[in-house]
Length: 151
Image (cartoon, rainbow, N blue to C red; front, side, top):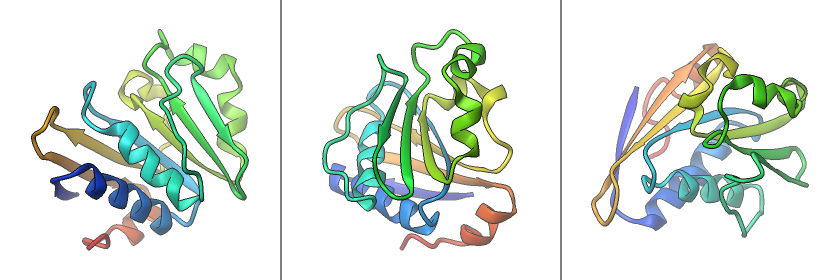
């Protein structure tokens, strides 16, 4: 487990971009945190690594698909009542693709999350600094994140 203190929005963007580059543009990033913690800012940093400049949280659409190579899928589970709703939109198919999947509010659908993933928890709100905790789950992520690779 690795912890960072994030002082600015720019730092959060940089961390998201760095994590995306370390994941090799393929994998699953599960984001956890309260409203206003900075999950979407982190997602914008990830998207920046893919060359995407405009990102908003897909709260009402559940998923935004970005036409990158490989693809980037940005999910938001906030409005889902359970994992069945996620599977009803073809979530299993998304998991089979060569893509990076980023999911905000992953805590709301824990049974849908792949065993191998990177858990990213953002704590804090308002103008205070954020604490970001990164927990690799599975061999692939443990090898990349066995120590502090983001400094």
